Image (cartoon, rainbow, N blue to C red; front, side):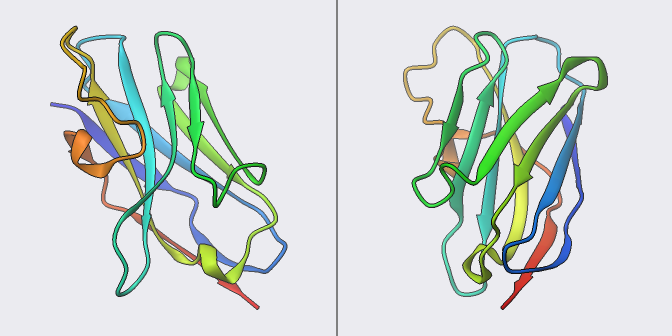
Length: 129
């Protein structure tokens, strides 16, 4: 069973930075995707970024492109989301999620939440103005 544990959230002033971590375990394949999503109160869950392990592709939403960077440390089985130039509108609970590729993945959408099978518990990010 894939398990994901997020950490690194907190309170930061606008313009500041945070780095979120997603520690993953239980993968039986080395071909998977890790996505970062966020959900603010009263809003739908939004895809923020994605990393695919096989080809190390990265994806970003327009709202974070140029400010957030996703990366992976294979030795630690951890995916990071470096968040710079944070804005109050970045305030949300951030979740990481995993998708394991099976070879029949035409439905895979890197920034769409229903694509993913496994979810972490979330970590709160609050950006004050």
